[in-house]
Length: 83
Image 1 (cartoon, rainbow, N blue to C red):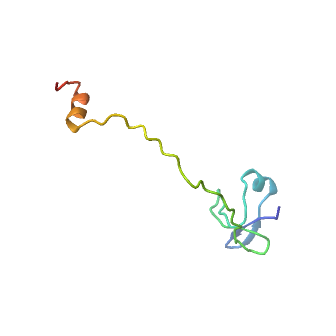
Image 2: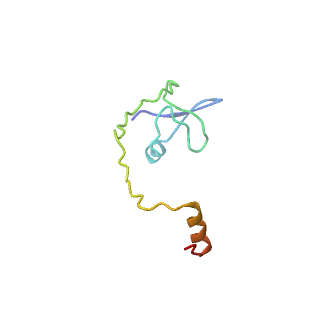
Image 3: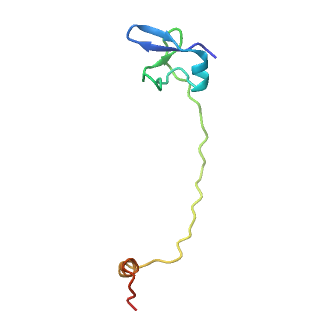
């Protein structure tokens, strides 16, 4: 794991390894505490992209068994029966 630093107006400040590990920080992110850019020792902030595989299809459940009309919904809400 590389050393990480915060990029501030005064230059770069080191981040403790325990903080980097605890919060899974990497260069290119912003600090959760100060909202400053996290860089490496050279000031580079390019973030390595992690490719995540997205599911190709999303299962859809078709469980609509009964449809109500507007009048029926109003009757149910009022506790009345129109029949």
